[in-house]
Length: 327
Ligand SMILES: NC(=O)C1=CN([C@@H]2O[C@H](COP(=O)(O)OP(=O)(O)OC[C@H]3O[C@@H](n4cnc5c(N)ncnc54)[C@H](OP(=O)(O)O)[C@@H]3O)[C@@H](O)[C@H]2O)C=CC1
Ligand SMILES: N[C@@H](C[C@H]1CC(C(=O)O)=NO1)C(=O)O
Image 1 (cartoon, rainbow, N blue to C red):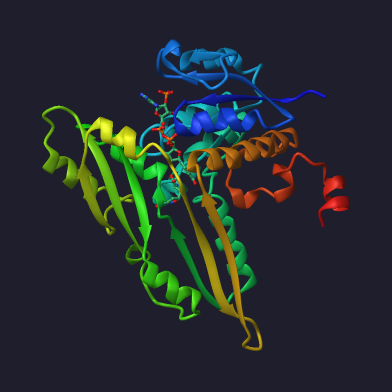
Image 2: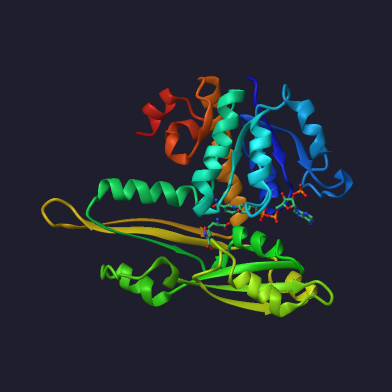
């Protein structure tokens, strides 16, 4: 049968993960990768994959069913997704939580007018963790929900530090408080603010002659990503970064501990243990690309979040197969 024709915009960690994930989908084909860089400087996994300059995308509106936007949340997606939603169904991983309402509105305005379907903020947080926070809270209205990340490399925070003036390259690790996690697992329901549950550590390669004190301050005071968190910044060489920080493991869990109607304790937990944050995130985004296509075929246009997408839409199985084999 005819496959869902997918495009990738932005070829970084997530874009590479998306290329690998699409290759795993029997109902999808990758039509092209679009980059702001010169195509010959973009090293894709499969040399047969077509790499084009992002300006060529407008010529593919009849050749691509869904575009996966893999740019950075800090600066790329807020500008790229509304522009692409004019022409394509889109899926993205926008993760600046505080800005999601305004971002949703900016994408919805475009997609409602263009008749496209744009699923925003897909991944694991926001994404799969969001779904589990909402589900467990709906099931246990009386209780507390805890989210923990790491120890691992946050791509959103790493993208954000790389955008700081004077930063040549860099990564950010998120480290959860073992003490607080123990209390949560013991059902102690600790009253700890979200910002006291993690610390953040950055490894930065500064441009030649850059003012490292100013860079450190810019990072520590960065709204939404670092301000309110205890953050440490280390300056290292490009060689050290490549040697010690090439892997991108991450993970974490969402726990809700609550009481049902007659006072029984109930605990719901969803956990992730990721050797590759980008490859897992790309797998989630690719599954939701299937949903964006199907929703658009049904005429469900405009911006959506993961809360608007019934689980069946992301599965390659038909609704009948799901009823028969998975309930
Ligand atoms: N919701 C969630 O759970 C998650 C969300 N994310 C989001 O995904 C976003 C993207 O993450 P990630 O892929 O790691 O970011 P990268 O920094 O690897 O890539 C971002 C963009 O930078 C450009 N780029 C990549 N490599 C280079 C290079 N060598 N030189 C110049 N430009 C380059 C690419 O655009 P171009 O090809 O056009 O140059 C790319 O799309 C993050 O900002 C985060 O917000 C990530 C993980 C989880
Ligand atoms: N969006 C995150 C996914 C998780 C990781 C995270 C953190 O370490 O703060 N928050 O959410 C990412 O870009 O990796």
